[in-house]
Length: 320
Image (cartoon, rainbow, N blue to C red; front, side, top):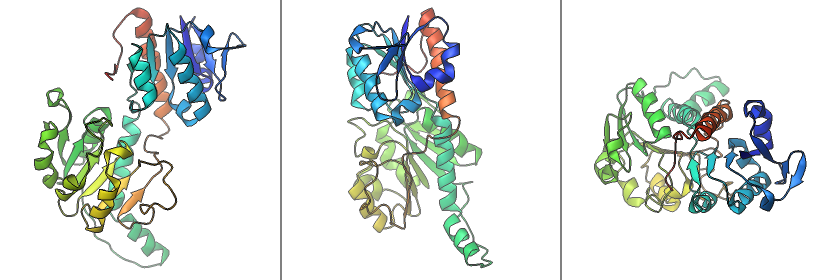
C-alpha cells in the first residue's frame, strides 16, 4: 500500500510502518517517494496521515491536501486535528474518502480548561499582584466542589472535561446532538435543553464542533440566560460565539469572566477589545499543545493503520 505522511511524522514513526510504500510531504509542500521528487498526479495513494504537527506549517498542509484531493485511489485519511470543520476535510469526504478524527487533544484541552477556571476561581491575578507588592493578603476564593458545570458538546473533549469536573465534586450537565449516546455527565440532553440548563451553570464549557447549527450558538439570548458569576470557556471554534454579543454581555457582567482560546479571526488582531478586557482571558488557540498530544495522535494513527490493513473497523470514524 502507498501512504502519504508528513516528513516530521515519518522521522518519529517511520520505523514502525513496516513494508508500506511512503510518500513524504516536505515542509515546503513538495512530495518525495523513494528519495525522488514526485508530482501528486503520479501517486497511487491508499491512505494519508495528516499528523498534528503538519497544521503548524501552512506550506506542508497545502501540499498534503493538494495530493489527497488529486488522488483517485485514496480510501482513508487519518486527521491529526481535533476538529474537521475546515473546508479541506469537507472536500476530501466528498470524494468518498473515510476520515477518522483525532481524540488526542482531549487530555491537554481538559487540563487547560481546569488550569484557566482554577485561575479565575482562585483569583490568581490578585495573588500574584499581592506577591509583587509584598502584601500579606489572605484572599478568599471560589471552590469547584459543589458547583455545576455545563458542557456543550459531549464528545471526546467534552467527556474529558466532565470526567475531571466530577473528580472535583462538581455536578455536570451535558449537551450533545444525540443525547442517547450518553457520556460522563450527570445529566445528558439535546440542544433543546440549553434554556433550562444555562441558568444552573457556574461554568459553561463550549466544546461543540462548528456546524451550520452551532455557528453563533453563543448569542445574546444564550448569554442572557447565564447565572451571575458564571464563567464561560470556549475551546471549540471562534465562530460558535457571537463575539459582539459576548463583549456586550461581559460589560454587563454576565458572564463574569470568559476564557477564550479561539476566535473568529486568528491570530487575534492587535486592536481587538478582547486583549485588554478585564473580564477576559485570551490564549492563542493553544489549549491542545500539551507535550503528549503529538505522540498520542501518532499512536492512534498506528492503531488505525493496522486496522485499515486488516480490513477491521477504524476508530473515531467521522461523519461529515
